Structure formats: structure tokens, C-alpha cells
Amino acid sequence: MFNELTLLLHIALLIVIYAFLFLVVRVVARDLSLAKKATEEKLPRITVLKGGPDGKVDYPLVDQILIGRAPDCDIVLEDSFASAHHARVYIANAGFWLEDLKSTNGTTMGIRKIKEPVRLTRGSKFSIGQCVFQFDE
Image: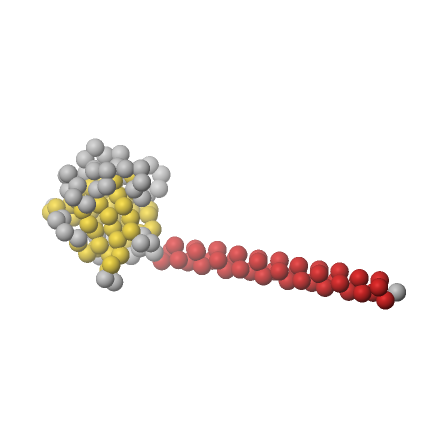
């Protein structure tokens, strides 16, 4: 009788442990999902307004975004006026910057071509070839 009771207590303890672990994993997964969603909503973004790739038009800026025709770019353009690695948007010195990567046809903000990194502010628009982009915080 003692062995049967001990066995039942062991089984009950295992069931409680597995139920606890299941609940912990479920809560952690839900929290991670909510944290990811909240983080993505607050990230600055580059929006393709005109002439960009089909489908995705909104790109979150985590560290940097590389723009160009090369397949390793974050935003791949099918524009003959864009260089393989044309420009990048990156975070530095508590700000957001646009840099032309010595492209053949240049990157423009408004009507002027940029020669050195330019600080971006909310609503800043820039062009690469026939494509128009907007930066939003």
C-alpha cells in the first residue's frame, strides 16, 4: 500500500510540474509576442511613396537600412538609375541619418543632391532614381 501511495504522489507531482511549466512557457510566449509588437510599432520607418518594390512599402529601422539594386540590400530597387548599394539610412549620435554611398546618380532631398550624411527628421523625403521615400519616427 505504501508503494502504491508513493507512486500516485510521484505521478501527481509530475503532473503539477508539467502543468506549471506549460503555463510558464505560455505566459512567456505571450509576453514576447506583445513586446515584439510594441517594439515594431514604435520603430522609426522608411516608407516607399513611389516607384519602390512591389508589396512591402514600410520598412522598420532597427540599426540601418541599405537601399539599392543589389539583392543583399534591405530595400531592393528595380530602377536603372539606382546603384547596387546606393544609400543607407542609419542611427548615430542620437539621430537618424541618410548617406549616399558614392552612387553614380546621387541621392536627393528636395532639389539638392546630398554629398555627406544628412540628418533626417519626421516627414523627411528623399529620392533615389525614380523612387521616393519618406522617413517617419
